[in-house]
Amino acid sequence: MTGALYFKSDDMVFAQVQGDATGSAKLCQLIGPEASKTIDAGVAIYDGCSIDRRVNYDETAIVLGGTFRILTGENYSRVIEAKFGDVIWLTKGTRLKYQGDKAKVFYARHPVDWASSSPVIEVSKPMTDVYHFRSTDMIYSQMQIYSGGFASTCSLVTPEISKSLGATIATFDGSSVNWTTEYDQISVGLSGIMRIRTGENYSRAIDAKLGDVVWLPKGTPLKYEGERGIMFFVPYPVDWRLRSQPVRPKPWPASVR
Image 1: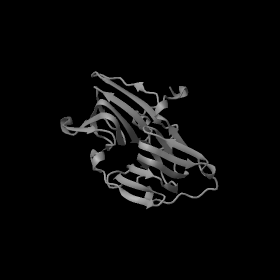
Image 2 (image 1 turned 60 degrees about the horizontal axis):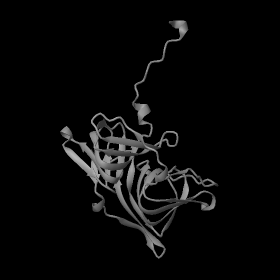
Image 3 (image 1 turned 180 degrees about the horizontal axis):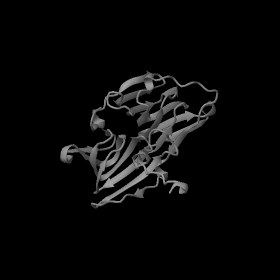
Image 4 (image 1 turned 90 degrees about the vertical axis):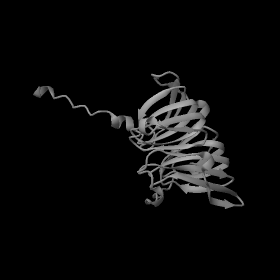
């Protein structure tokens, strides 16, 4: 597997996946099985199109521009309209339609090889396991910072919702946080400058801006910094905190003490 990867928004090349009189859909695939064993990720553009699909993956996505629309539920009666900064979570097996008006969307999916895995078995009733987190409703908690500045996080997709991917939005401004990833992680810049220092003696500085994507494999030592930076983070597995806790021996039964 690879080390840290940085994809600038301005350098992304999109391929047409659907284009006709009813609209178009374009895709820029960034992370797949060649770089990751866990997460598939990229950026999609939906404009005037309607893509009908029963998804073969868990997916979390965040809107980078325009209006992203998902139709789901019985007879597609539930219509979700997401704007900039809104986050969507949906589970494998969900029947839906992807739509949009000049929508630019960053997505992350699990498993990484969903396109070549077995198709989802059809069921009679469409699933409605789709969550819509509006940016205007998000509540942030301040992190403990040891070297000045400010940082905060808003946890969205947690083990109570997902069995695979997590999702968090974090802000960093004038702070510096040492960290080593205990998970694979894909992230996208939302505002300001999100700086990630990695490499030997933290000599490589990645300055991610709006739409820039950063891939970090498990075990990457780094420093999170930023200048009014806001970033959307997707780790795998979602329960990495629980897995990283040391296993404590169970106490002996009273009868054998």
